[in-house]
Structure formats: C-alpha cells, structure tokens
Image 1 (cartoon, rainbow, N blue to C red):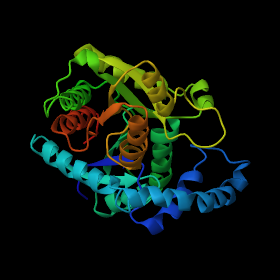
Image 2 (tube, rainbow, N blue to C red; image 1 turned 180 degrees about the horizontal axis):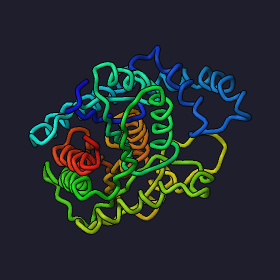
Image 3 (cartoon, rainbow, N blue to C red; image 1 turned 45 degrees about the vertical axis):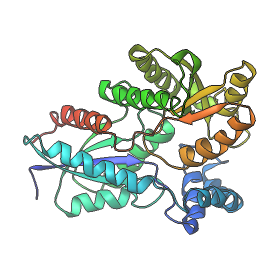
Image 4 (tube, rainbow, N blue to C red; image 1 turned 60 degrees about the horizontal axis):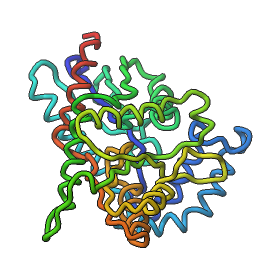
Length: 328
C-alpha cells in the first residue's frame, strides 16, 4: 500500500472521443436525473435513449466542425500532468493526479478502481467546475460516492473554488490579453470601446429556485474579476435545451441587445468553463461569432484557461491547503 501517496482526482464532464461516441455520450448525459428528470425514474433511461437517438445526428455535425471529437480529455490530462508536476515540486508530500469523467471515458468508477488497484487509499477529489451546481459538481460527487463505497478510501471533496484569488488572477490575465487583441493591424481601441460578455452554461430556473448556488457563485466570480480590472460587462447564459424555463438572458439574446445599443466591440469570456470543448469551440467560436458578424459586432473570445500557469497554481494551492486535513 502506498501510504505516503495522495491521489488527486480531477472530476469533469467528459466528451465524445469520436463521432461514433456522440450518441452514447448523450445517452449517459440524459440518463442522469441530477441534470434533468425525464418522467418517473423507471422511464429515465428509455426516454434518454429516445432523446439521444434523435439529437445525435444534429450534435454530430457540431463535433465534425471542431475536429470530430471533444478535446476535453486531452486538455484535462494536460491539466493533470501540469498539476502533478507543480504539486510534487513542494517536496512535502507525494501526489499522483488522476482524471475521472462523468459521462465518457475514463469514467469516475473506473478511475476510482485504478486508484485502489495501485494501492493508494487517500483521495482529494476536485471538481473542475469552479461554481458549484447539483447538476455538475453535485452529480460528479454522487457518482464518486457510489463508485467508492465498496473500497476503504479516505476521500476529501473540493466542491467549488469560484473566488480563489489565483483563479481570478488567471481569468483577469486572459481577459486583459483578449482586450489587447482588439488593437493591432492599425486599429486601436480604448477599454471604454469594448464590452465584455461573460457567457456561462445555463441551468433550468427551477434548479436555481430550489437553492442551487450556481448563479450566485457565477456573479461572485465576475465581481471578483471587476475588483481587479475596470470593464463594461454583461452576463448571458448558453447551451440551454428543452422546453423548460432556463436562466436568462441567453448569450444570443444578449448579443442582440448589445447590437441594438450600438455596441460594436465585444470580448466573449467563457466564465463557467475551464477547458475548451464544444460550448467554446462550436457555440462561441462558430455560432455566436457568426451571429455577431450578422449584427455588425466585432467579437473576439478570451482564451479558455486550459493549462494557464496561474490556473495550475490556483489548483495547486487549493489541493495543498486541503491536503493538510488528510490523515496520514
């Protein structure tokens, strides 16, 4: 047993690693009752099968436009590698960083088995969703509880870190670089001429009304950013689906509103995503970019954090502080 090694388990959504994986990925997603309740529980999976069948063809087209798969696994693995290197430079403890995905390989269940198999018994589980929601971090931790109950493991959970100073610094850095990108090729813009549109993943409003902190934590993240940089900002929500009432305004409607106000320069900032995936590479870079052009808006996007050095430092700091409560 590797008593002196602590596993760090990075939890994320996952994404299809091929066009053929799109339909089963969607099935896994819609089978999760913590995201959406499809009738009584015994009908959840049959209905998920129907929805994934009809939605897969359309969704496959999106993935074909961004290279035929989601890059989220490779990015999360790169984050894991960078984090492991950073953690083990401290010399105080030994860490091994693993990746567990909720809806596609490597599944959380399989990663927990692997951690146990190699003899590690202590896990710090970190959700890669900065702002907590029962539909994201909550669902991942529910799956982690199910996967680990057959093993004798000590698990510490990190559910959100929406206001961590280094995470905010990383966001401010990519926003500054995004703002700077408007100047060049003979063009120059002052900050007053550029509006920042934060885009967060939407949620059904009833989940927020039931007490989910996601919306409040998203706004709190933005408030921390605006303490460090003076910007004109707006917030929209993307990626809604289905007939229920979702958080408003939508990112699409917000772009239209900004156009009507005569705003010509918009920096889009994905605020609830730390890795590039279909929501940034297709929805923002293709769908909203096209809409912005139609509306006469010069739209650019701030880089996703991915393996930004300040972001990795933020994760390292979060893990090291939590590791003090591990029983050795």
